[in-house]
Amino acid sequence: MTAELESEMDHIAQGKTTKKDVVGHSRELLAEQLAELLPHSDEVKDALSDAVAADAYVGKCPKCGKDLQLRVSQKTRSMFIGCSGWPDCDVTYPLPKGKIEAIDEPCPICGMPQIKVTPFRSKPHTQCIDPLCESNKEPDIIVGECPTCAQKGIKAHLVAHKNPRTLKRFIRCENYDECGTGYPLPQYGKLSATGEVCEHCGAPIVVVTTNRGPWRLCPNFDCPAKADAKAKKGKGRTGRGSSSRKKTKKSSTKKSSTKKTTKKSSTN
Ligand SMILES: [Zn+2]
Ligand SMILES: [Zn+2]
Ligand SMILES: [Zn+2]
Ligand SMILES: [Zn+2]
Picture 1 (tube, rainbow, N blue to C red):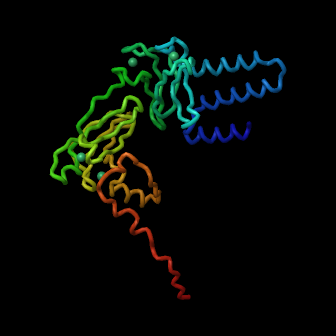
Picture 2 (picture 1 turned 135 degrees about the horizontal axis):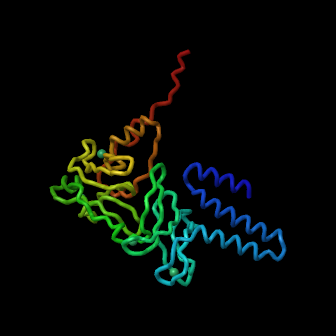
Picture 3 (picture 1 turned 120 degrees about the vertical axis):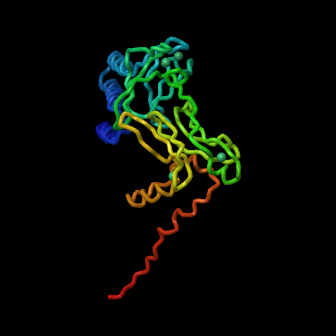
């Protein structure tokens, strides 16, 4: 158990798990061990489980009236909100990344529970757990013209959109089925279009404003300017940005210069 806890402490330090998760998990582990150690200790286990449930409580399920709780997905290890009435009730809500805390105050717009979200290295904010609530809706924004379609002489808008189910944001060509041009966007911050185009790759430049200030960015993961910056940092991070995979553009500049001939010139 100690080893498990230690690795979880590391996860907290790395921002992978919240302290609350681990405390909850530790209690579960403790409850299990106590149940083994003490005879007739079901009461102890129940009491501890209740304490864990109290920590995880978010609000009432709108479908069945049972408790909505913070849960960790066994498959993805990411957190979500689930109903304690499961498997009879299948109500779930996605959670954004970051530290999640339940708060008492319901959403002023729809009355659903709200949560306090603290994204990594950012200030906390409060949001309604229902992605379909007006307070969470983001209008689609036209951020520019599609460079891939433009090459073929077609005029098509690039549209920024937030998926209400996954809470993920991305830019896609309105002609996406045919041209496949799309770029991922940061999950947080108010998005605005600039009308400008990245000089390196032709993607639209957008501004994402968080409480750390405005951030001007080219959303293209495969942007040559970024490849250069990464190479300089020595962080050869590849294999990300799967949503921009389908692009028809050739990315021939990828790994041509990395192979230096390793012949040993043994001159001395
Ligand atoms: Zn329910
Ligand atoms: Zn709401
Ligand atoms: Zn296009
Ligand atoms: Zn770019």
